[in-house]
Length: 297
Ligand code: GLU
Image (tube, rainbow, N blue to C red; front, top):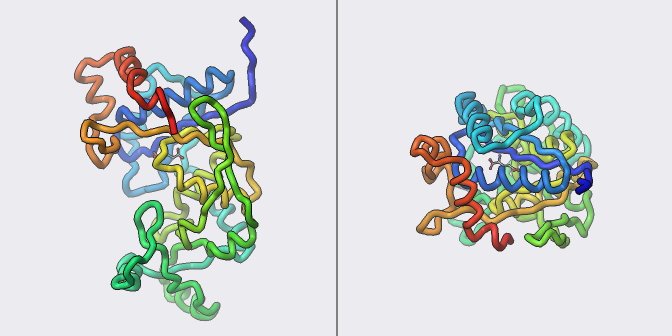
């Protein structure tokens, strides 16, 4: 049989802030299988910008666990930690367009400003939308605070960004049957979200958009918990003039009580399953019989 090769590029991008669990195995295998079926490439990316929580021990465990599962990926592996200068360039490009502003607020100040305002909207991650405290600081005031050594996060000016990108922003979403549909992006859900933090010079959102573009990723296959983040990613791609991949947001694995598996809910790790004597074949068999494979979103 002749195999048709394409230029499609898939990636699995775990954060090295804990051990991988069954949900990661599902996502990694889905990417790997889709890449193989398309005659495309499969990349692994370590998302380790969160300097406080990411550890090299977890990174090593990712390599071990994925190798044990039978996956192979291209090397060298991109580690976000080594690319802060590229994220800084993207942020500078947005700032040069007048689409960002520094924010000196603490979390406490923001909470105080929104407390008592019933029905104050929250972003898809559950944080209150930024109430705009630092948005209209004068140039002199910003300078004064910076000179006084106050650290600032960088926020997107969402109103200006949407005006700049124009209406009709959408992405291609692939369903289970490989049909694609257009999804209208709704970046305003995120308000003036942060693009860099006081302690970390890039947010997940800016890093992922820059990385996917620099790595030539054509297909982003990831959990549906990131579906709403794609609106923001699509906006950043448009503003930075980056290509838009096709997305597929797959359903998440849940435990018996319906809770999604997560590192924070202490889902059993792949290495614990391995220590229990589970084989990669048994694990793949188990994943192929869970309902998420039968009907993606
Ligand atoms: N690093 C993210 C996570 O571990 C995934 C990001 C992505 O696939 O875009 O949940």
